[in-house]
View (cartoon, protein in one colour):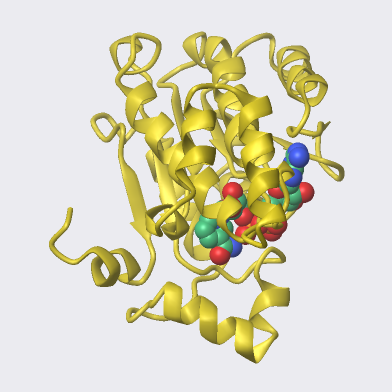
Length: 256
Ligand code: NAD
């Protein structure tokens, strides 16, 4: 059995992943705002520190895998704070624990929304590590009535961070695969309210067409996250893997 830390463990994809890993006999430490082994707000520096401190306490400083599911889709600046800065802090903060683990692996959640045209001011500020500028750019989007663009920008930024980081000294050469999974529309508490509204559902399906099997359930995402973070994954790293019923193929076609 391995020791996993899963963020966003209280709901949706994270919750399904915790259940899947526990069924396989692994030890899982769940983190979330509440209703988890570690309560921490990953939108804040304090919360990010709490996550890492508590993880040290609960594990003797060793983790075999980290799965960063915590995310937010609200049209507010906090979305970039959780989806980009919270994820970076999770992975960078827990990396020393992974380095002490066995066959260490990590995966984060991007989204098909990452390939939609994004607000590059937000993306650039995030990739520069400038949280204040990213929040200001997100607030400017809200003020323009374009708050919907924050989510896709946060997911594009984290996917690009992943490409750079996976091959940097601390990860690939240190023997730690780091990947992203980009789901299409998955039926969770994040999306259920939007999908319940016929007009919004139509707009979502137009933006994320899923010819294979339609919307996914979180239980259908969990096994891929588990495999990417298992010892069986020896050579997949730096990849954004679309679990999207074909949406990426529809949207990008030959443009790989
Ligand atoms: P969800 O809302 O069901 O679960 C997300 C969890 O993250 C919640 O439990 C929430 O409390 C937690 N979280 C939010 N802000 C936090 C914070 N500041 N600190 C700590 N925890 C926080 O959503 P989900 O659909 O399971 O999404 C999981 C991940 O998958 C997210 O990163 C999401 O962006 C991504 N994703 C989801 C879909 C989808 O259609 N559901 C599609 C693509 C990507």
